[in-house]
Amino acid sequence: MLWSFVFTMLAVVLLARLAQQALAVAYGRYRAIFTDQADVRLAEVFLFLDARQLWALNVAFCAAVVLLVGLMSANVVLALMLGLGALGVPPLLARRTRQRRLAKFDAQLPDLLLALAGALRAGSGMQTALRQVVSGFAPPLSQELGLMLREQRMGRAFDEALSGLSMRMPTESTRLVVSALTIATHNGGNLAETLERIAFTLRSRLHLLGRIDALTAQGRMQAWVMAGLPLLLAVALHYLEPQAMAQLWESALGWTLIATVLVLEVAGVLLIRRIVNIEV
Image 1 (spheres, rainbow, N blue to C red):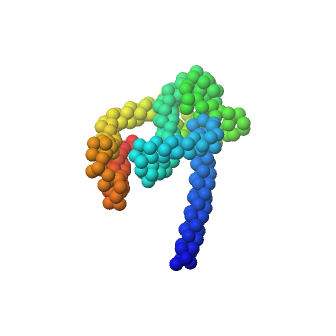
Image 2: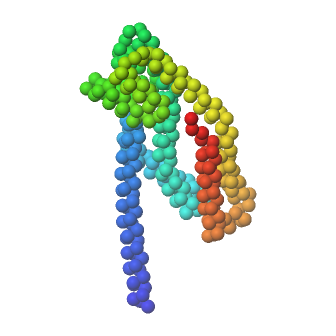
Image 3: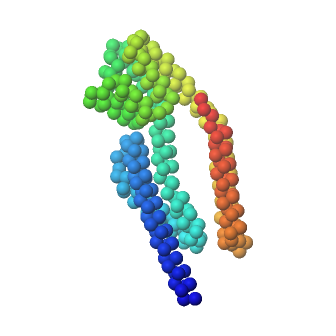
């Protein structure tokens, strides 16, 4: 009996040690991935911050979520799950920031092309026209084109600088503009008229995208209402009928139902967003 107890304790200690080592390795790997991706994504939006400080803020945010949920619900498992889920909040915010930056850049392109066409008609060269018009625009267009001009001053070819711009801002509008400028610089022709036509095309495309967003706004709102209503209803019933809802929070069957509901909620939101996401 004594030896059985000793072997059991040794097995528990060994498993705890292995779990600790696995968690330490996973923590270090996730931290390295987080800091590397944070450096790249922050540089893409011209935010030069220390990724290590962002990691510390992310850990503090997750700890605050765990503490707050634990105090409010007195459920350790739920608090830990939401704390782990909070680790995905910074990547989502970074992705959303990049999407907004790309959309704003596309919205500035028609005005840029018209300004370039006017400068070319006045007799300026392409690079001179770019330097003249870039200073009059707000970020992100002024930042991206300013970086492209600085690359040219450092000796990079104009075609390579345009390719770098297309890689940093991978949108259909940017690729169209880069292709037109590349072809025009190699083959010549009436570049001012070409830029004006492209500006008209991009403006029409933005107008069409705006109409699509307006027509599909109700569907996107329905997705969030559909996803949020069961959660709000569960919280309300938890405070109105705590004894009845205790079976949901404190039993294996209840946790199975919660996991099933979450999976179906996510699937429904993704399906609705796929339906209303119309590509032009």
